[in-house]
Image (cartoon, rainbow over all chains, first blue to last red; front, top):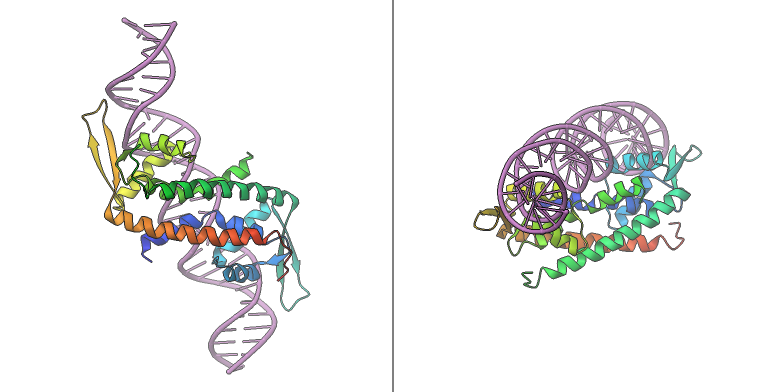
Length: 115
Length: 115
DNA sequence: TCATAATAGTGTACGATGCATAGTATAAGA
DNA sequence: TCTTATACTATGCATCGTACACTATTATGA
C-alpha cells in the first residue's frame, strides 16, 4: 500500500475505532486484551492508539475503569457506562446512516450522470 | 445532538469526505456546485472543508484544475486524474472492507459472548 | 438606486485523533 | 540469564474538519 493510500485509510478509520471499542465493552476488558480481540475481528489497532482512546472515553464518562491486582499482573479493566451506551447507540445510528448515503454516492459514480 | 456526539460524528465523517468528493469528479465540477451536489445526496460539507480538501487533492495529484472565466463569474473546475482514479478505486475497496468488518463487530454487541 | 443575499473563492488558526516513539515494569520461557 | 510477551504511561507530530475572517462579483428587490 502506497504511503498516500495509507494516509487516506488512516483517516477513514478515524472515529470508527471509538465505535469498535465501545461495541466490545459490554463486558469488562483490559487494554491489551482488547487489542487482540479487535485484531481477531479484523480491526487492527495500535496500543498507542487504544490506550489514549480508553482514557479519553473514561474522561468523557462513557467508560468506567478499575484495577485488578489479583491476577498475574495488574490490569486496568474498562466497561461501558449507561451514558456510554446511549452515546454508542446514537453513534451507531449515525454511522449506519453515513454508510448508507456514501454507498449510494459511490454506486452513482459508475453511471455517467452529468446533472 | 449533544456536543460530544457531534465531535464523534465529525470524526466518523473524516476521510469519507475524500471518498465522496472523488466519486463526484468523473465529470468536472467546481467547488460551490460540489457543496450543493453533495448536500442533495445527503452528505453535508462545509465550504471551509471542501475548498482546502480540493486543493489538497490537487497537490497530491489526484485532481487537476482549470479556471473557467467565460461564465458569469470565474469558476475553478476540478476533475479526477488517472492516478486519482486508481487511488479512488483502492480507497473504495478499503472502505468496503472496513464497513463490512465494523458491521460484523457492531452486530456482535447484541449477543452476550464473553470470549 | 442602494442594500442585501447568493455565488465563488482564499487564508489562518484551532481542536481532535491516530500513530510513532520511548520508557517503565513484571511474568514467562529458552 | 537473556529474551520475549504482557500491560500500561507519556510525549510529540501530522492530518483533517471546521470556525472565522476576508475579498469580490452577480442577482434580487425594496
